[in-house]
Length: 433
Ligand SMILES: [Zn+2]
Image (tube, rainbow, N blue to C red; front, side, top):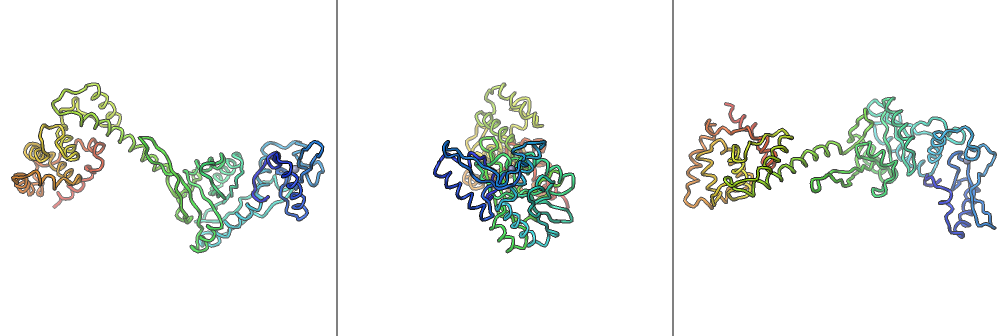
């Protein structure tokens, strides 16, 4: 009755004879002091330990044995009723009672909550009756029920309560006393996964924090997704948070601080992009533009990109081959695809003959910090002169420099760090008078 744990009799008794004898004494003592260590989980009557000395066997017996306990008679009690009784029995433990006080007191610190009510302890015959939530209150004009989750609960009871509160338009918030990420019990996991992978703990510490902040403070734990070799893995995170910070999704009975689903979805998208990017690079960087190429590899790339709404040219040497070469060259710091030796030669080529790619190339030079390299390679100052000539034309949006925007989606996947498609808005705004 300290922890609220449901313990099978054989585990409570153990296999050490001496310890069992000690336990028998302690159990007796606790009954005399009217704070029993163990009670029958079904009828709530205190139990004591009996030993059959000759067989060296122990068993529990009801303190009051009048034959009414369903554990003995079974009678007409359904499994569901027995479960509900066991669940309610755990609520009479000291741990549970203290948790209830902590939640109620924390709620009373918070002016956003009103009508805070604690459920009083039920005894004996009332056990099977429908139970009100441990603590309830009104938040934002709607009822919120707090149900404390000790280490033992029953999946079915949880599911029933969820459904009940959902129907009533109330929000059900589960509060844990402790959580061990490595040894999460099934019932905890069930609550956790159906709550966008957030869970909440309350303790003496959160009560102190609630008092200090004049709001309900809970210890939030969640998992964050991250990419590990193209796969999504998760890691634990957590912090103290005020209830008003939490996102509430009444329809799905979810309350969370960290939106796992949204983050995971975004990661799944970028995982696919990353895969495409690396596959494309592997092909592209390994060849020079006029080299023969492996048609089956290109065909596979076409298929993959088409699945993501991007049409690659029928062969790699067609448009936008020069745009990609220019951007890869800027990124790598040496000519990619061309038989030039220096990056500045690529720059001349783009500025002279492929003006529609000049803006993208210059943007890439800036983003990849190539200005100094270009300056060093431009020994005779030819590039500097050329730049002085075209800059006014760029500034006045001379039409020959109008960027070819048909390949933005491809550039976005291959060079996400450039943010090239976002520069469109900038260009458009500079067009305005
Ligand atoms: Zn009983």
